[in-house]
Length: 316
Image 1 (tube, rainbow, N blue to C red):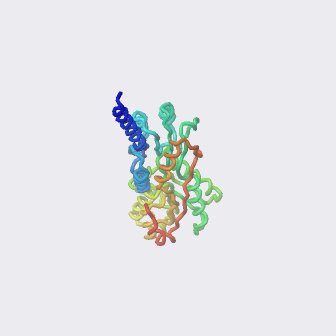
Image 2 (image 1 turned 180 degrees about the vertical axis):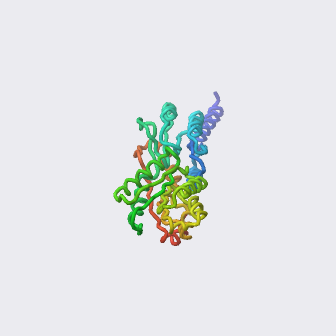
Image 3 (image 1 turned 90 degrees about the vertical axis):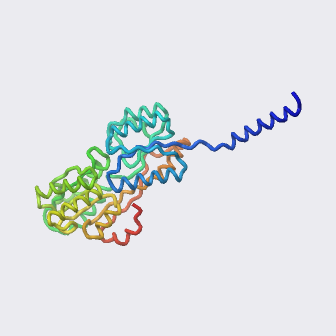
């Protein structure tokens, strides 16, 4: 082979190697199965995840389950078939995930839970859970009630529960009941699901009021149900926040508007902006970095008196 030909081949080879080195690393792909769009909180959570994925350079495959477990299971199976790098999802309910998560494990795709936990005997099916301590949120709501209720005599509480079988509904109820049982005059007289939506919250509160006018307190598992209930209370000719004390959870902008109008007494924060934290964890998990089994978000409580001052700081 001539010297010039050898030189040419060497140059081409060097160019190919340099080109290979210069190629960007393939982007991480995250499959995310969202609960739905049932509340202001969920909408803010979705925005946070989409924006954070874009900012982190992570390719996001997003699915909206419309509050149905079967839709989330289909989405997770689709992510497995597409061979995504990591799967994350906010479980609609706590049980019934083992089969599909075993399929993800066999495919060697790590799974991260966001916002809500699951019940499983095999905790190796997911890497970590990032989100709120729902039981503590319920406790905060209960403690605020005991410390701030000024009336005498028995206190009849009606409860608007979240989606049946969901972690926040189960745990917020548990935390709230745990605290109020210390004061026997505080008792839940009626409890029904409002499915975390305004429309259902209004409908159930209307039914409560038709059955029983002797209600001192409403405990709603989220702000959207509380806002729906406020409409029902007003339609019944009563003053929400005065005739019936209203306690809810999430701390979305709509709750602050209701507090500034004097119609909601307090909201316990549940931070939906999990996106940036999730993307950091996705990268660490893919890089093989160990994670704690539970990562809690930091949250506050906002009574009516602080609403006007805090409102301009709210991002959701």
